[in-house]
Image (cartoon, rainbow, N blue to C red; front, side, top):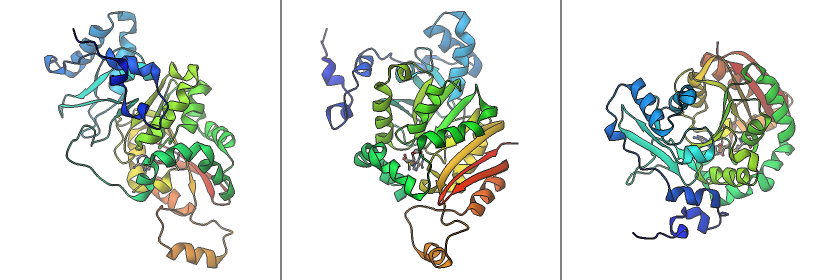
Length: 343
Ligand SMILES: C[S@@+](CC[C@H](N)C(=O)[O-])C[C@H]1O[C@@H](n2cnc3c(N)ncnc32)[C@H](O)[C@@H]1O
């Protein structure tokens, strides 16, 4: 039998500029082989079969079924079938395989996050997104993000992570105990706070940037309680969220709307995944506010930007045109926190 050294199985990022992740390197050795092709049953039977095969404890079957239903295929939105160890935490998800039985497409964890982008697994085709997305895929920007970059936002009126977190928690009161998705989580500044708060049954830290997610993992692994908490790391595009319609209780998107390729597509997607009564809370930089001198306004209107800065009115307009209600907002200089609800 061939003996394989652990180091040869380490994900690439561990041997480069990123700190090692010893907790997961051994999982890759024992990662289960997944034979989805042998499962030719109805959707619900497959869910139950896969769950029972992995963990024959019938007492937890209901929970396992929910886990299977949680993620959906980004191509067709069919709930994915999960095979692997039960549990909604990083190690369990890392060791699981996911498959869409409609598209026959498989999804798995790459390094330390579950890749649920449409381009996951493609070999020939790659895509370059607009600057607001591509910039944050850089390892350097991802590394610097919580090491000075984010702190700079305070100069534009951002109150700072602790205060922003408290403000968001106030808006999320009706979503307590539910599933929260931190869309465009970056290095997980708020995902970690949401997970640690114990307010939600599950927290999903979701971003398009592979390197932001790696940074997020680095911060998580330095905190033992977070590794085993109900927290998942998912790579996805905000314009194609991998969840079934009406399946999410709360969506948070901190300092993100201005980075998205299409804020209207993103908010339409967020609206789609929210359940009735579900809450969306976002923050962003405004293009200008009511006290901005007209000369600055004119300059900002005419200058070409890498980001899409909206006005208060535009943000409200997009949210309401997507069908969200109970819109409210708080503004401080160029900072806005807004909230809206799915009727
Ligand atoms: C300024 S950071 C915000 C990070 C964090 N939420 C915060 O409050 O500090 C913006 C994030 O949006 C993400 N992003 C940009 N385009 C995206 C897209 N198409 N889908 C998902 N996330 C995207 C970037 O990768 C980046 O992590």
